[in-house]
Structure formats: C-alpha cells, structure tokens
Amino acid sequence: MEGIASGSRQGKRVVVIGGGIAGSLAAKLLQFDADVTLIDPKEYFEITWASLRSMVEPKFAERTVINHKTYLKHGRVVTSPAINITDGDVMTEDGSVIGYDYLVIATGHTDLFPKTRQEKLSHYQAEYENIKSSGSVLIVGGGPSGVELAAEIAVDFPEKKVTLVHKGPRLLEFVGQKAADKASDWLESKKVEVILNQSVDLSSASDGNKMYRTSGGETIHADCHFLCVGKPLSSQWLNKTVLEDSLDGKGRVMVDEYLRIRGRSNVFAIGDITNIPEMKQGYIAETHANVVVKNIKVMMMSGGKKKKMSTYKPGSEMAIVSLGRKDSVAQFPFVTVVGCLPGLIKSKDLFVGKTRKSRGLNPKLVQG
Ligand SMILES: Cc1cc2nc3c(=O)[nH]c(=O)nc-3n(C[C@H](O)[C@H](O)[C@H](O)COP(=O)(O)OP(=O)(O)OC[C@H]3O[C@@H](n4cnc5c(N)ncnc54)[C@H](O)[C@@H]3O)c2cc1C
Image 1: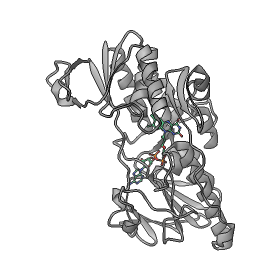
Image 2: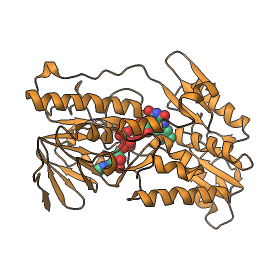
Image 3: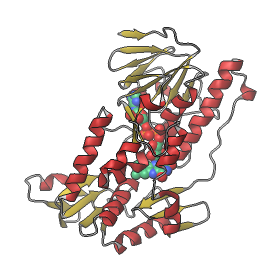
Image 4: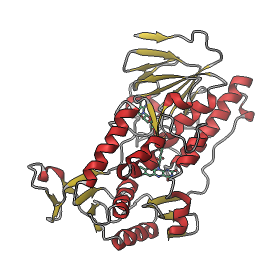
C-alpha cells in the first residue's frame, strides 16, 4: 500500500470521506485551517437535487456537476472509495493509506456514478436524447426522484405519454399524505398516469417489444424507462473496520450531540448516514457539516474542551419537491402547499446558485 505523506502541508490532518452534499461543504470550509484530504470515488461533487433537470436540459448539469478541485483548491483529493479505517489511517481501494488526526465520514448513499465530470455530462446528454426520441416514458419509483423526473418530462415534453409506477400505497412516502396527494393531483393534471401498489418486471421488455408487465397484471407500453428507486446507504464498508460497532440495526452511524461517532473523540459523521431521527435532507446535511467544522476548529485550537463545542439538535423540518420549472409541493411545519408560490423557492434554479455560492463558486458561471 502506498502512504500519502503530508509533505510541506501545514496543520492537523483532516480526512473527509465522501464528497457529496455534506462532505464537500465540510472539506471546503476546513481547507484553510487544516491539511484536508477529501476521499470520493468520483472526481466531482454533484448537486443531487438538480439532477432530474439535467435529464431534460443537459446543459444545466454544467453548473451542477463540479470537479472537487474547483472548490477545494487547498485540499488534496483522492479519487477512490474508502475501504477500511484504523485508529489513525484510512485505506482506499486504489491502495492509498491516508493518516488522519480528525476524520469526517459523509458517505451518504452509494451509486454507480461515472468517474469523471465529462462522463457524467455525456451521460445526461444521452438520457436527454433517449427521452427526446421516445414517444412514451415509464418511470419506476414514486419517491422524490421519480416524481421530479415525471414532472420535468411532463412540463418540457407535454406531448409524451408518461407513466409512473410506484410499489407503495402513495407517492413521496418520506413526506405526509397531504403533500403526496397534492403531488399526485398535480401529475394527473399534466396527464401523467400514476399507478400505485404495483411493481414492474423490467425484464419483460428485454426482447425489445416495449411492453412492460406489472405485478398487478397490467401491460404498459413505453419506448424507454427510468428506474428511480432509493439508493442504498453507503455504510456497509464500515463493517470490519474499527467502527464496526458504530452502526445501528439500519446501517446508520450512531453519533453523539457533537456529531462524533459514539465513543470516539476525533471521528465525526455527517449527512444522511447518521442515525439522528430526522428527515434525511441535504440542507440538514449541510447544517451537520457546519457544526462539525466548528467543532474540529475548536478542537484544533483548544485540544477539545467540550464546553466550547457546538451541539446539534434537529430543528423543524421541511421538504420541497419540485414539479417542473415553475411549480412545487412544499411541506412546512404547519402547512403543505402546491403550485407556483412554493415553486418560487426551488423550481427555477433548484438551489443551484445558492449551493455553488456556499462552495465559494460563482452562482452562474460554469467553471468545471
Ligand atoms: C430527487 C431528490 C431531490 C432532493 N431534493 C432535496 C431538496 O430540495 N433539498 C434538500 O435539502 N435535500 C434534497 N434531497 C436530499 C439530499 O440530496 C440528500 O439528503 C443529500 O444528498 C445527503 O447528503 P450526504 O452528503 O449525506 O450524502 P450524498 O450526497 O449521498 O453523498 C455521499 C458521497 O459519498 C461518496 N461515497 C459513497 N461511498 C463512499 C466510500 N466508500 N468512500 C468514499 N466516498 C464514498 C459518494 O460518492 C458521494 O459523493 C433530494 C434528494 C433527491 C434524490
């Protein structure tokens, strides 16, 4: 295995594992205070909640798929998945061994991402061409990705027949019934056919006949399909590491009020991977990142005097699911609304400018 030395770099060594919503922010905010290494299997950070727009407008991805090096000029990037952790080192699949004084685990969800930004942009272009050349589209999965994709296609390509099949009893199971009903009504008003309580046998159309069979015995004709099911947590790899006892029964990492992994003084976890009982949302993952950045800075300066450290308490929750370019359905603590007013909050720019700004980037300019 190859060791990565600090060389002429200054300060405590902070290793952030996972360059998604939480990890990218933590690494960016710490880069001038510590010797930061970001580990991620891909070369770029992607603004996840903007990904469905990129399927109907591939140019949109130029602002939302951002090379780690663009916002992490003072840090080091290792492009390989982490596979093991000891008390002082992280090992990656490519054979690197990276020493740490502080460790932040932010591996959220796992997926088969292309490795380079260019490959990811080409992937969106291909998906767009696929949608454009299809008369009918089948979307499998009625969570936020499935609903947002159905809405994007219905708005940008109103002439296409869109069918959304969900195996659960209602769409958007992560929010309340009201929000789900409003999303469902909105989709139906745009002529999207919503089929609930059924799954799709994707292999049934493998012979090119474009007919998909559902578990309820229905047959759906579609020129192409998109599988929009939830991505599994990326925590399995922690088994057989020194943190194997830090996972709960659902594979979430157990953290204390300082977002440190329970029983560890210098190892933190942030984002969707944590076991905090709250909605799993990116804006919450970013709050975790801010708390941990403060705590690592305090520990670096004071040797970890607990009373100066920030604690994290879940706040009030909200969720906004965009419905095309103008509308959205929003669940706030006391009210759930649908239409162009909540759409003003998210649907035009999908928080892309805001997210780029928080990474120190020009909100509008494309810079890789
Ligand atoms: C369609 C959709 C719309 C959404 N809309 C919103 C919204 O409007 N607002 C909002 O707040 N939230 C929204 N969310 C939720 C939000 O995207 C997630 O809560 C957020 O991405 C969680 O961030 P994270 O950093 O914990 O994990 P992720 O963003 O999943 O990042 C995990 C990172 O870890 C990396 N990784 C995985 N395994 C390893 C490993 N072994 N070694 C190294 N790196 C690894 C991955 O490559 C990835 O870069 C939406 C989600 C979806 C799907």
